[in-house]
Length: 197
Image 1 (cartoon, one colour):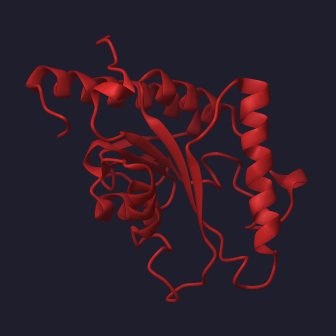
Image 2: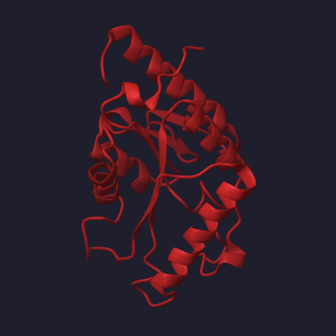
Image 3: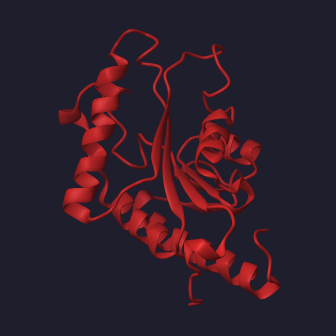
């Protein structure tokens, strides 16, 4: 396995963007997570986050939450769920994510709702992320399209074949797939002496 470079060796950050529902937490049976008590963190996400940080990538969660626009939950409740998620990651696992970006809008109301790439572009602007060196992980077509439109490589969990750069059948396979993908990318960059590819 190639030795991962330190963050300071790269002029811009490399990042793995994670969709939330179905990747970070179990997809809710009722379609939306409206309270912290219903948020079920996936063990495979924890392992994936460990891989990402070990490979010197940042991690950002990007999520559509139109339940806010539909009046099912207040934005402050969604923000509190994310605050508690980060608190749990730090205290129980000694992990964290760089940011969590939320689209609170319904369809056709904005430029940030996936499959548009606005959340990823905003994260890149805010944190100095090089999108062409980054990855988008999701379980829906809209996640993969948003990643592609932002210039990222993509990993699809479940779904039909042929839509993403890397595909895994189930969430439990994600940590291994991420490790292979990120190590291979690091090796290519080091071999070519390039900042990204």
